[in-house]
Image (cartoon, rainbow, N blue to C red; front, side, top):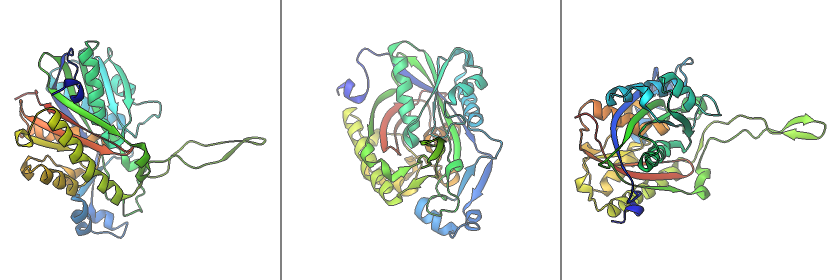
Length: 341
């Protein structure tokens, strides 16, 4: 295997994934409750998505609250002081502050020695952020990082659009990573294709306001999420197996060697299709989609944390992960969990 193709540098230090955490939005909304607002039903939603309930933040619950709670949990599992962090990287498309929410999370955690910034790549955001943070550790410029995926898509959902309102929820997940002699991030591949980006958007308002005299300006703000569900589904079931296959081949790892398949939680049919493509038994596919819906950048670390805490994912386990979504963006990572046994 060429280590550069797989995402590693032959001169780099390793990266260890040793702590996880998550936080849930306050309100649980069932399919039947949505059926009281739009023309839908529990059977219709479950048969097409696998979702039965989703979490929605309460009006007083900020994204930074969810992100900080998930971060504290990951730090506690790793046994780290917040002051030992060098980096807080927040993957989100729904910040409290458009200028960036990671610094607020850094302050809430008391991570006074860490630089903090946001990274936006929609549902691929956590995976892109994990890879980004790993590069700082591999160069030796940083030692410890906290990677958080958090989103509150409920703020941008049209709750009267039955095609999209049934899909999304809010949440946060985090992973603590540090530089190590033994590399736990065995490889990665990241992809983007802006020419197909129109199938999934959270677009700016098309406003045209008077500024002064004949001068006009565009007022800030966003419309609700717009999505071509069929095209997104076709994109996912085509590109996710392809990028995973390429990564496994470059890392000389067979699908039968995987302990777990960890995919972005968008639709249960996508998870099942990818598992079938690699002949991975359904019990080895991590999924909590039924209870959370699509929480965007939070899905991967959230389901990982649940599986670590209930004992399914154990130290030494090998996981293949893939994130995919708006942009269009997608990617895959192969890593070994090195947290508490």
